[in-house]
Image 1 (spheres, rainbow, N blue to C red):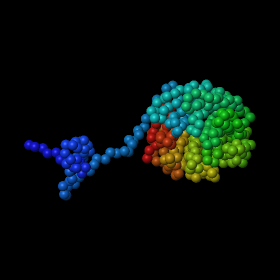
Image 2 (cartoon, rainbow, N blue to C red):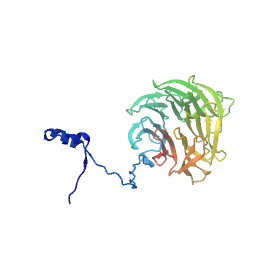
Image 3 (cartoon, helix red, strand yellow):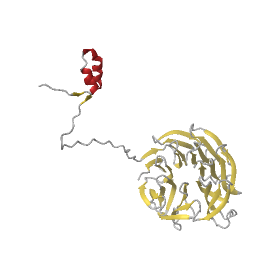
Length: 390
């Protein structure tokens, strides 16, 4: 049987064929550019739909990083470089973790003393760590992982560790708590020169710090002793001190409930602070998380939890979720049946969105708002990598 192939030629090609043997080059060109015939569907027939290819990304699954040699004490994230920094309670090193691969890519030795605390300035790609045993702050270049400065804070007795550290990337100022037998307060570090430029007397241990970058304000959760009540005598014992970042002075003192095993986080864009006060094994106190207006310093909302301690609170401004890593003590310290959970709450109402069990006691938490990832460190020497997804 003969098979006939049809070829549709443009008008120029037909003209070339009619020109005879002397125009062979034109014929060749006409055939080269000719288009094959495409059959049209018969009347009443329907064309099968073209298959569609989904461009939606695959949902990310939780992963974990096994930490060798130590129990984590704090975690911080640089969202611009997608690096995670982790310190430990019982070993004096800083671990650097690649957020893309969830692998440890660097280990930086620290001065001895343990229980270091870490903070990151994304604007300068510098990492700041408290060294309680050495009464100092280490400054690390995030590009080279090299220690570029060590600031001595010779004001701390051995039994009072440096308790907190926070960064304002807009002003390039770093804040850490200091304490000595004559006073307790805040040390202010210039991030450009990496030098101590001021101290602020608070008369108490600033064991929790948060920064409102837009207002250039620092918030310090303080627990007074009976001998130190000169800075804010009108607010007894437990307070939130508001420090002006321009003048480095206390401008207001806000009374609050006792902060046992607390945690602090800030969403500067929304002008909200999140302060967790955990009662832990003390049944006379309740565990709460409060939203504080960082402009008016008033409480916007409060949620009450069972007796709990928190390893930290972190907020994702993009998804408007607040995360709490908590350990519950249902009947106080005598109950061995503790439960550990990662709670996700609405950033405006504090309504609980989800509750995820943890296998071990949480010790630290951080959020990367650019990758929408939650990092939870636990006492079994694990860093849990959890997607912050609807």
